[in-house]
Image (cartoon, rainbow, N blue to C red; front, top):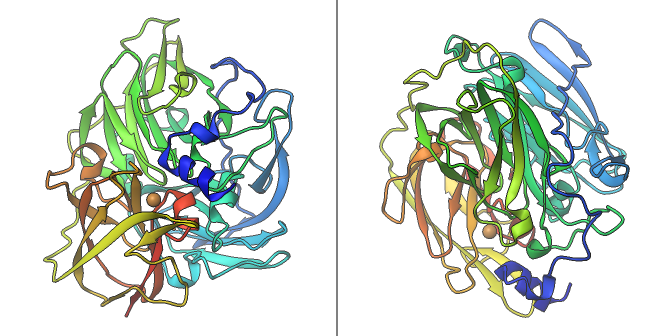
Length: 463
Ligand code: C2O
Ligand code: CU
């Protein structure tokens, strides 16, 4: 795409980037929801689960009867969910069977630099790398995805993404919906050509008007008339969702990026930007059997992309689950002694780039020097008011508390600890973060992956 096209795409005007001749025409709610399989360890010992994963280009049935070329972990699109247990290590050997370098980042995890999946810790084609995950942090819905320098946007888009559920004993007594009533929903957009192949255009946001849930277009899901715990991940490159039930029925948010909130919050909608996770409890008990309710995205630019998926209330079921009034207290992050300011903006010049503090990411540059044991406040400002481009901010290594946005305290899922936070056009967000352990060089970046691939990333050296 020429720079002009990219600009249009980034500014979301979509004029030069209209929806292409539709993908295999498929009315919404034609295919059932698929639940990603749970990954099986290759072996286990007293302390550790060992997994072997092969990254490769394979095919997946996204549209019924069509094979779509995708990049996969162990052939699954989306990838299998790794279910780890808090206090038990997981060791994942990743073999790169693709033709390009990869790097596997465990998003939201607190772990040493060598296992972080830093963009320069590449796994070359034909090579493998062993990632050791300590799983010492509290229970949370994490995810793993590609992070190869410059190519992460395309490689995640083509399929290198999966959930990593860190299961925490301490949660088991709370009585939240579990088992088949604990359901992951990976939400994303994509652009397909008429043959059902993925089209990737860097910064081609406006062309991506097909919504996928767990790798299938606008599926339906037959549910029982009872409570469900949904773990939602937005694994889109650039799209932010504002999610709501079509009848405006309230539901409860119980978790965010780092796991359980201090207390459940009842809402009718919430925003989910790329990389963020939310856990929500939806109670279908008030619906009649045979009723249907749609999950909608109020931020959709086109009518056909307003519906994300449909819940079909199909049967009754016993429900002994509950949502207790308190869940998990926030840790005290201490007094902040350091303040930093981060500026996010897109450079719409002859060559387009996305900038942090007016610089393009340079893996050989250190942007922030951080001392272990300190608590800091970062003020993150998005000055792309005119172009109307939203950004978000993701920190590797540590979860943070969101103090406020535009001076107002945050609500909903943002009351929990987070690793990714939306920074709307013209907005500013203050976060508080404590660097506890694990020295080394870690990145922070906009998680709109086309932006990070265009340079919106910096590095902090923690000593
Ligand atoms: Cu989910 Cu640095 O990324
Ligand atoms: Cu951005």
